[in-house]
Amino acid sequence: MKRRGKLYKAKIANVQPATFYDSNDAISLVKKNATAKFDETIELHIKTGCDGKYAEQQIRGSVVLPNGTGKKVRILVFAKDAKADEATAAGADFVGVDEYVQKIQNEGWLGFDSVIATPDMMGTIGKLAKILGPKGLMPNPKTGTVTQDITKAINDVKAGKVEYRLDKSNIIHVPVGKASFEQDKLQGNFDTIMSAIVKARPQSLKGAYLKSVTLSSTMGPGVKLNVSKLMNA
Image 1 (cartoon, rainbow, N blue to C red):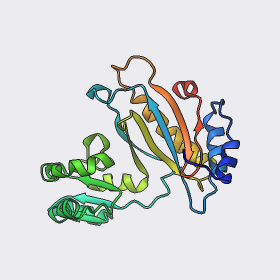
Image 2 (cartoon, rainbow, N blue to C red; image 1 turned 30 degrees about the vertical axis):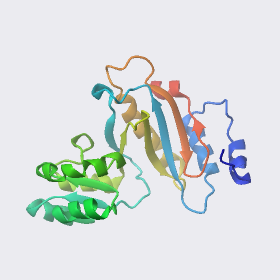
Image 3 (cartoon, rainbow, N blue to C red; image 1 turned 90 degrees about the vertical axis):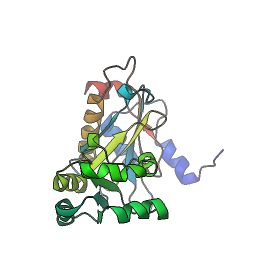
């Protein structure tokens, strides 16, 4: 069993284990517990009742956070000719096709945070699915990262677009912002994410959709939220 230090134990002492917090109180508590020497990321962890083995119960989408993520995002765009020029003009960090496919395949290069592609590139970069897919980086029309409107896609990512999807345990992990954000900015981002995920409930799902919702910072303990209030918000 991993031993916890005094500082972490002190943080846990701030959290009532039997309490399910309202989002405003949870955000305040998580911010209080984010005492690392770096600006910790605040994340949502949502355990769902979905079964990702079934296509109709898969959840995947994206949303632009109104107050951004607080992170500088490195963008890779797979595009050619005029669309490549458009991507460069819009501020993409890396633009090209074959050289980046080879760099990822042969060198294991992953020096980027978001990948965008024009539809005609998908046949070429499909070979990267086994590398990018597990990391949530494979371009997908559902998240707006396979598109002809390269400029909008890049601007959305820069503005604070985050993607959400089920992992293998049917849990969604998504960043809300940085601990340094003001309370109301984190609340705005939180509300935007939760609204999108609540609306994404699969029609075929029987039973509970959100089984648990936890908010935490990078180095802090989780704070459980009141699920019924989130579903009825």
